[in-house]
Length: 269
Image (cartoon, rainbow, N blue to C red; front, side, top):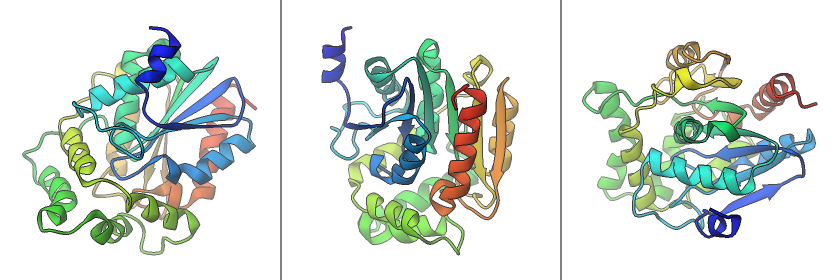
């Protein structure tokens, strides 16, 4: 497939910076490309090119006929094939981390490193108490008649440390409030079907796994640590005093970890 055809099938995205090393940034089920502002700023300052997408169904991107982690990963691969450079790193948060794992499975020859933030390799089945609570906490307010702008900011704050504040936190709440309900429902359903443990042993590139100490309802640190142990060249870091959105709750620390990892493992100054 040539680039002109690939461009026609791509979701909305932004490109910032110039470099032969590109970081592709994949947001979570609550999200859009705009909430990566402070990570993009740090990466470009340190010499990287950044491509941030609105996943299918998010932002200006059209809702796909099929919404699954696998179908989104294939679109992600199209994006990397069309816009990738000499070195490509895929960074995914939460649902985006699931997409990143499967994208590596589909396109290992063009993905040279991964950064997985507050995510897991599998949902673990829908029948368990933890899994039922995960879905209910996120979808029940919609079923009860609330809109995403009415309940999402409070729910997201509950997924952060109580002390979380600042411009990065405010930006997340603002961006998420613009989401479409149909997209979010489809995203939660897709997450519940994800099974990616088969990918972990295949990863032969550097991988950074970042968890939040207080992220106990979405991506508990022990889950991410176990995931990292299944990857041959993985580093695990648990950020202290943050919840699910460590990159917004403490962007300085998160960005330091990110830039340090890329500089050491990807041989980029």
